[in-house]
Length: 309
Ligand code: AHR
Image (tube, rainbow, N blue to C red; front, side, top):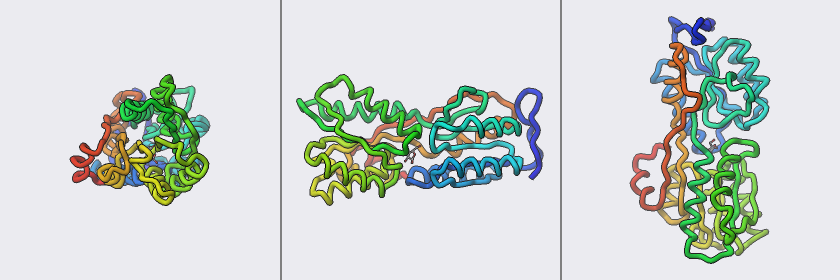
């Protein structure tokens, strides 16, 4: 694969061949993730960018292996959707030494040296948690409490799990009618969402009034666990989830989920635009945030016909 050159302005000279992008995708754990991968693949094709795509199956070690292979292949730009926040500084230094620009996609990396990446494209997960918390405050406004809340968290150490949890807790805390009864990590998957909800139910049973699930896949698993336990999801337990996949919107319309905070997976076009701008030597904002909304039963009806994922 031909090498790229870093220009004197700090940008890279446009090669006379298609730009080559190495993308380390963290996994395929959820419908959101699969829509995100699809979006990146389609946008690369559309933009005429050659994409080398690697699925790390939720393993940071596999992400490092993929990135080292991108360096060896002398790709023009490396994009990383990091599974967890910590532990990236070493590999980012290796990329920096190779002179390859880095774009962080979806989740954040903890690094003291902001020059290790050009830009971060993705959602404001803290705000998503706040939106979920605000919904619960409004929904439970008439109740005097105590209101028992449980949480299905995503992958331990991942940005969406850390920030959604913080945003939710910061919004609810201070209102003493709410009681946090328990939380479980369920890795953003349907299967673990069901398993972990089952154990929460056996431990806490009828004390649970609200579930905050950090994504739709876990919420869908939790619905199955609640029904097996003999409860009516959405009625006996209020469910708030994050993402906005078609399957979750269907449950929202049926009344089994009460609110879905949107997290937009369609980051491919933004990513390709950033790749092109880097190659043209242009300056990018350090943070590109995707605009998102909140779905209720009414707005889900409107949205579902156009939902692709
Ligand atoms: O990082 C985004 C999160 O990761 C999505 O909410 C979730 O579905 C995915 O697995």
